[in-house]
Length: 285
Image (cartoon, rainbow, N blue to C red; front, side, top):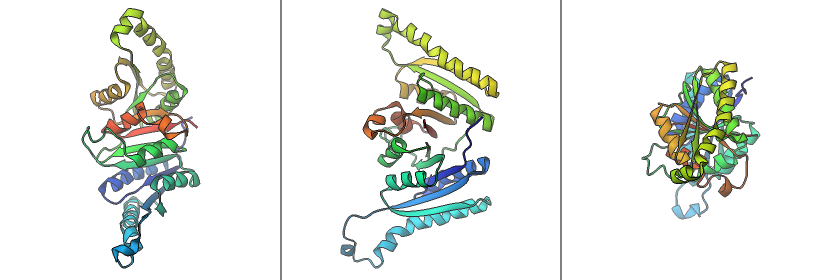
């Protein structure tokens, strides 16, 4: 039975990037008949506001963040969808995570600007921390990259975290009538694989998790296409998504733990940074 999405938290920031991501959140809320919450956070100013000699300085700082919430309400209203809005002042990461807990969100949606591949190599600090500490799944949406559930790519490495991601991919494939592309990437130097037969053994061990997902897909009526490739995992996943015109990448992640141990340099961090399409990070509860 697919996990039901009943509550969606969308982080909204001033500008077209935040509102584009919110439009994707509206689409999902309408489809799942889920409660939609929009949150906008004014970063706390640590300096002395009086030195700027601006009348109502605090009001001026808050204005663009309140305005984007008004725009979010207008977007939701145009679809006859009710949205609960929240404005906070403080650390964006802390406020998003607190709201996710408080509102019992099933998924957090974050947008980020469209950038060149070089600029995307390092994931934004706020986004990376939200992914690392979030109590629920997180979708990262680049500007102008609409979520397309018809072709879903999921990375499978046999761990319980990747299998949880596989389950979520199947659920979305079932809900939206999409195909699931299950990919295992073997990262072993070719020469070592030939000398010691390590590559053949790694490929042999990769089949059972993929076949498990295929069997689950058959029972649900979701087509699962599998592949095993060699190379750097993050680059191979991104390249495979481009080759197969994927609309959404799904990756598994550990539960909440120390941020540095979880994300920096990991496959999740690098794929989310480099991919020019939406990425769903599944948090195994």
